Length: 94
Image (cartoon, rainbow, N blue to C red; front, top):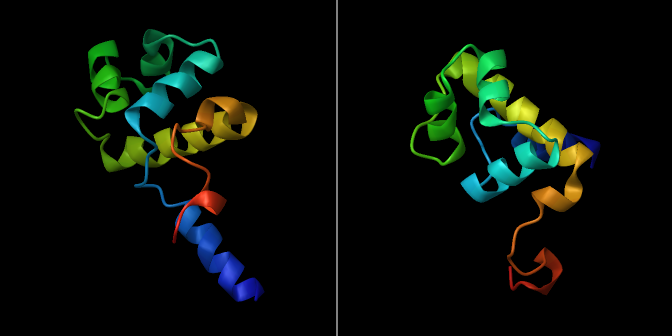
């Protein structure tokens, strides 16, 4: 069973999977950061970062892994901001 859980963890940690744009913005705001502050850390313009956040563009590979890592960290730190408006998984027919 631990092999299966490790495989699931690997799926969850995929560097190319980003939450919805709405969740990305909520996570950043929950941490009290501006787009400009985050863009500066990544070495990109605020406009480029805004395009990542709203889903108009995807970060290049070197930024994508770091951005996904940042979003996961924020989600851990601010779980309420990571919530979506969808129905809970246990209530959904899967």
